[in-house]
Image (tube, rainbow, N blue to C red; front, top):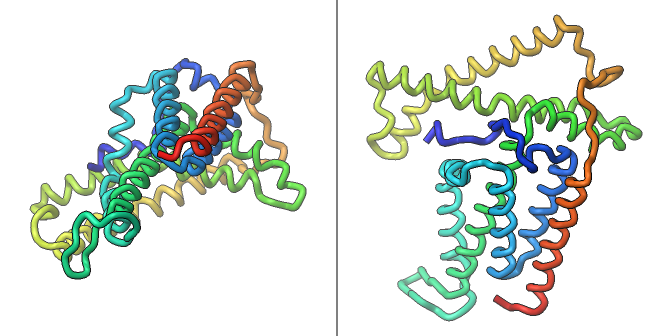
Length: 269
């Protein structure tokens, strides 16, 4: 399961999606999220499915990576689905037993919310798959730069976000190594009840936190040795520039959003 977590990983490529301006990709990701929350039925979500499939095909990222990015959040999807299934009581009753009641409205909401969460994960994962951490940092800083007028630390916030994304794969790899080492010493992490498994995680979490703090200290020391003082006076090797393909991608996204709105009006499914 640990090796299946692909959040924060970057897959180099020369596809159309890779060559989009990172600022536009940030905007497209936000618009995609808006698209999903505008959808009031499965037809609207179907538009989102077409959009994200088209984006993955154009990016050249294997479709199996979509499923791989989904595996770690399967428990969250199941938990959310169960809550919607048992707490939504609208619609025709399908099953009743004591205080448990399952209705058509609960089933509909469960499937709808699960599909929305899955599409959200796919959309945000595609952003990190096709954008390097350094480029993403520059994009976030440029997007937040107007807030510098009110003394908002745009560069610092962008740097924190990019470092967090950058070290997610590193921490995952470190966790996998610690788990392998503990299992080699005879640690049992898969059997027993929930309490026993939770206690078995302590020998993993403590070394992981120690390693994370050590890496953070080494990174801070390295930045100080290189005389890093934030974004003031900083220059960039590559300047961000928009191209016609960026505006075409933005137009296509707006067309998909318009399609979702029209489906909300004319189709009640």
